[in-house]
Image 1 (spheres, rainbow, N blue to C red):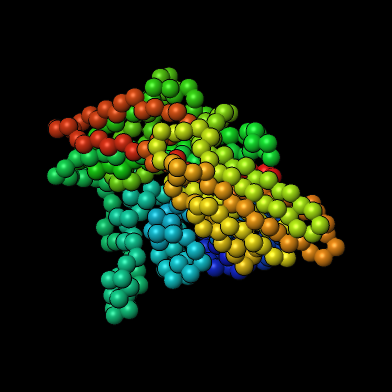
Image 2: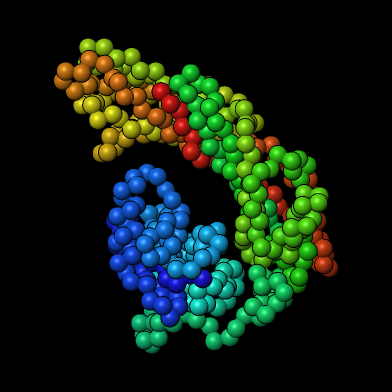
Length: 413
C-alpha cells in the first residue's frame, strides 16, 4: 500500500505532492531522498530504505516520481505503478517536462485520484482514463477560465470499469475496421577501439493501434518466438497460450497501446561502424573518424548522428567532414550530423585538437555516441507469422510496420 507520491524536478524541487491515505507523510522525506541521490552519484537504486519509509523511484525526462510506504509490499508493484503514472501523463500531455506538469496541475491531480484508491492501484488503463478525464486542450482551458470550473472529470462512469475486459471501451463501433501492428526496436551496443563487439542486444516493443467494432479476439503468432527474452505483456494478453505455444491471444484495448516488450540478446552484427583514430604530438591531436555500413540491413540507414564529449584539456577545435555538418556545442560536445548514409562515399571527419599548455599528448579518449534509424526492418530477425481476427462480421484491414533505431550505441576510442 502506497502512502504518498511526490513529483520532483531535476533540481530536487517538489512539484507535486499527493497524500494517498490517512497517514500523512512529511515532506522532509524528499530532502533526505535527494541527499542520498546526490551522494550516490551515477548509481541508481529504484528502491531505497530510509529510517522511516521505503521509497520507490522512477525517473522520466528529468522528473523523479517518488512513492513512499511504511508497510511491506511487493517492490515491483510500486515501481510498475510509477511507470504507469509516467506513461499516462506522457499520453495526456504529449510529452513530460516540468512546465507541462505545472501548467496542467489540476489534470495531474485528477488522474492520480482515479489511478489509485487509498494506496492501492485502481484504474491505470489510458483508454478508460480518457473516458473519465478529458485530455487538456485549448477549449477546455478557455471554458475553465470563463466558468470558473476547472474540473475535467466526467459525470458518467465508463461501462468498461464493470466489464471483464476493463481495458476496452464498451461496444465501440467503426465504419471501417482496421488494426495496425508496429515493431519498434532499439539496438544497444558497445564496440571497443578495434571495432569488435563487446555487447549487442535489442530492446523491442510491439505497438498496436486497434479500431475494431464490438469485442474482437486477436491471435498474433511469430515464426521464431524462441529468440525472445524478458518478455513483458499488456494485461489483455492471455498468458496460457503464450506459455504453451508462444502465441499472443488477446482482446485489444480500443486505440493505441503497447502489446508487449522483449529483448533479443547476443547479436553478432551492427548496421554501421565507427572507426575513430587519435594521434597526438607536441600539444596537438590529430582526429580521424570514419562511418560506414558494417552489415547492410537492406533498407536505407537514416538520421545518422555521431556525438562525443571533448576532454577538458582541449583548448580549441578545428574539425571538418566530407559529408554532413559538424557543430561544437557550448558544453564541449561535438556533434556530427550525417543524415542518410550516402551510397557513393564513406563519410569521414578529420581535424586537430589543440591541447592546453604543457600537455604533449591526449591521455583521455572520448566515447562516441551513435544514433541512426532504419525504417521497414527489425534487426533482431523477429518475424511475424500471422494475425487472426475473430468475432467480426467482415474482414478488417491489417497493417504491419517496422522500425529500428539506435538506443545506447557506444564506440570506445
